[in-house]
Picture (cartoon, rainbow, N blue to C red):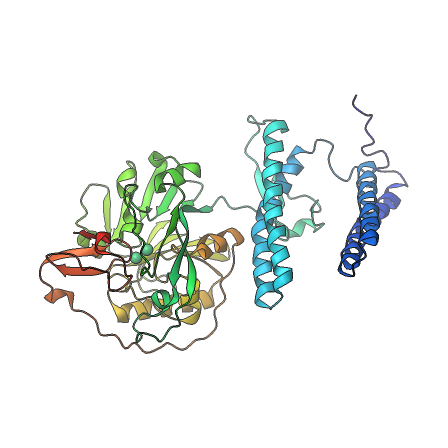
Length: 482
Ligand SMILES: [Fe+2]
Ligand SMILES: [Fe+2]
């Protein structure tokens, strides 16, 4: 039988401020008792810890009771739950980022526990979502309303104006900002691989100058939903391609999660809905599924398009005629707030993409670096077609990030999707460039067929592929003839 509701009984009466104080006091009591339980446990006093936890749980019940009496939360609470779900989902990335800071400060044990909390926050998001699907009223006829996001806790409020206070963290309405329609997501298709630091940071340096440390590796590209159109940055690896791994490999992608196109569909984007594709560069892990998007215009720098012999009415050879973008000399505007920018070096026609969102910039840079360590330490990877241009591009990328609040979105490291989830602003120290020692192979004097390593893009000229890729150590089967 349903109970008679106590909701709002004391609201507007002289009891209201007393009940509010009681609710707050009880909530503080929960915090205090759980802290005491923890300390008691550390001191081996398990029975005391148990008693504190019992008290804490009762205090929690009391806090909820007083809040209901005052009608602190709405009786029809599903919209509130939807907003809280957003907080929990974002909470996972926020707590994980905080755990990383705690770990960097040397507090390993605390960081380990916070990583569990982070997962729990994410799990709360999942279970709330299940409840919402089961019980929340479907309001499909409601007019489109604005969404306001609490800048402190991420709570989302739907309506014409922000709420007077945030129901989760208590911030005033001024903490709320209208949510932009822009949505960037990582299209993740490989994870759990590794790369050697010498590969990611040893570009142009004598062998042995970078210690051989294993770093995490993955593979993801990005999709930009501007609210008006769907724009891809790169298109993954071809579904049928696999990447051999040997004990000599210096970069692996890890296990395939799902084919690229299916990963995109799983994010809710049908291939037919994609209107534009921005190609950072020609390598097969960035151009693999260009064929899969029947209605998309493919924007690619003229140098890369010519190198790939791309044909078709939908191919737009870009000459970057829209002038400078901040400290980059040449760009092409693709949509409001979306810029395709010439950034050569990794390949001769390499480009990056910058997306503006209010005061924040998202930089989707292809392979300017393979991992954030290289960016932070100001080191090139061993993969480049033009060493001097790669140096110049890395300097511009670093200068841009120092001058603008930038979220750095990489292709080959899990830091790419982690930075995105936490919307982490990249911070860079001043680091001197290391003078390059490597001399470059002059490809204009090359003879024979051109073989391209499908993992790192290394170009080999001759009748047969090399036994092993001199750059990423893949076997000859990784080479495809162009
Ligand atoms: Fe590449
Ligand atoms: Fe790549």
